[in-house]
Length: 239
Ligand code: C5P
Image 1 (cartoon, rainbow, N blue to C red):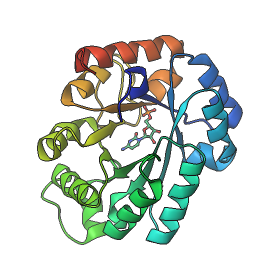
Image 2 (spheres, helix red, strand yellow):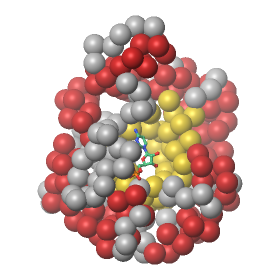
Image 3 (cartoon, rainbow, N blue to C red):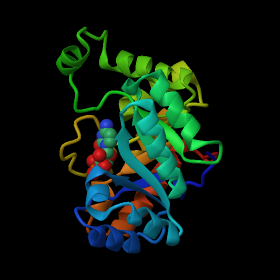
């Protein structure tokens, strides 16, 4: 996954309508990578993926697939045929599902990225779901990433605080996609564990997913440029 700096900033199109999403894409001429999540996909449908690709944009389809291997493989194939660049599956779907997703993506298809623990889950929630107390949430994220890696995946979604422990455990071959980004001085809104683009980049994040810091800014194009610049200064000239 070699990429320019602009390609490393994924703008989350968390809009309730196709029109709102496409207006934001028009306003962000310099941005090349956009995230389509469950809300927008359900409202606008898969045709939106083609609309974005026709504009020369890359699409991160964040639908967090979690189902039997055959069904997930079918969904990944459908996404690959639509030209998606990157997509998410739940690591907790297990090895067979992860392998099926990876195989369905093929060698030239989308990068399959695993979601480990949703950041909305606290330690007690993990206990309720899995029936045991994790040593720590970070340990659990590192463990689930191990499952994704041993199942052939090379990327995970992880919060800024988890990037360093993940890189320490799995090295730079692991691509880390990091949401929870706020420009210095922004309102954190509902993100409790967030970081500036610079800090996330310094920790080693390969891709940043940025929503409201850009899309709710008074001047989204200027905010995007600010994120790119902050990412570059954190990452250094080699990025
Ligand atoms: O607006 P904001 O920058 O908080 O948007 C973050 C985006 O990243 C949203 O689309 C959200 O679904 C996604 N995300 C997240 N935290 C995670 C995983 C994904 O905020 N742990």
